[in-house]
Every structure is written in C-alpha cells, then in structure tokens.
Image 1 (spheres, rainbow, N blue to C red):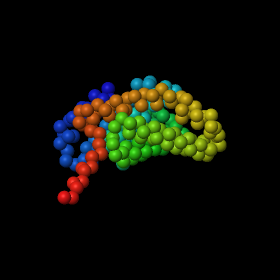
Image 2 (image 1 turned 180 degrees about the horizontal axis):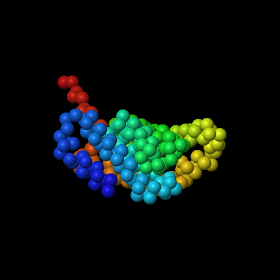
Image 3 (image 1 turned 135 degrees about the vertical axis):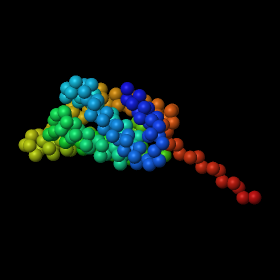
Image 4 (image 1 turned 30 degrees about the vertical axis):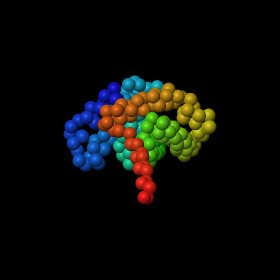
Length: 207
C-alpha cells in the first residue's frame, strides 16, 4: 500500500514537472504526514498494538530518506502531537511529547547519515536506520525520564528496555523489511534513485 502511494505521488506529472525542488519536497512531506496520521487506525488505535507495530515510525523514516532530514525532522516532531490533538491518540503527556523527540531524532539521524552516504544502497539504508533507531530510543528514554521525573514518577531501566526494545521488536522488524523494500522500488523506477559515488578517472601519464 505504501509503495503504491509513493509511486502515485512521485509519478504524478505535476510533481515531477516542478522545477522548484522545495515545493516537491513540501508536497511529499505533507503526504508522509497524512500517512502518519492515518496508519495508526489500522492498529485500531489500541496503544498496546501501536507500541508493538510502531506505525508512525514508517512515514517518518521514509520522509527523512526521500526528502532529507530538514523536512523529516519537523514533520516527525509535529506528527504525534498533531495526532494527539486531532484524535486523542497517542495521549499527549507523556507519550506524544516523548514520541515527538524520539521521531525527530530518527528523522535527523537517518536523513543526515543517508544524505552524507557516498554510496546509497541497501547497506547504507540499514546502517542509517539502525543508527537512528538506537539514537531515537536513547532520546526517548531521556525525555521519558525527565517528564516522569517532573511528575514525581520514576522511569526505571526495566521500563526503558521494555518500551524501547522488547515491546517494539515486531515494529522494528517491520521497518527493517518494509522501508528498504520501498526505497529499492523507488530506485528501480528511477523516481528516487540511489546516489552512487562517481569513479575517479585515472590520470593520464605524462609523455
């Protein structure tokens, strides 16, 4: 489904013909934001299922990888808070607030590292995504500890491991399978091709 949406948007003549890359990226960012608002409905808006499948993480990663971290970061930060105000899920405090910082960290790290990759390929995707997942979960843990501490509640290491890793394993696996698959499909259709380092031309020997 996500692959089809991406292909439809990217192959739309109005988007492809846009000379202004900023407008194109803003259009795609708005699309990923809309996907992030809708996807949690497929988990029935049940927080326990959402914590396992992490539906909002997918469009955040895609936005950062396709449009860059400068677009992915603000979109990622806004998404959970905006959704909390619109639909009441996730709960604003502390869940949506901590998610905002977590998703923003994913978008920044994944988008920045991928943008700086000399050779964009599936290996680079996995490297960027895994690094971003670690960084984002650390940020989430820190923010959770601060927010719960302000409310007089403790945030234990067991709570961190459970929320950041154990409960999230199905969602992590889903992301590591689905996101590279979408990026490979976009590369093969030349809509968002992988950037490959140019080979240096051998210097001509002086006669």
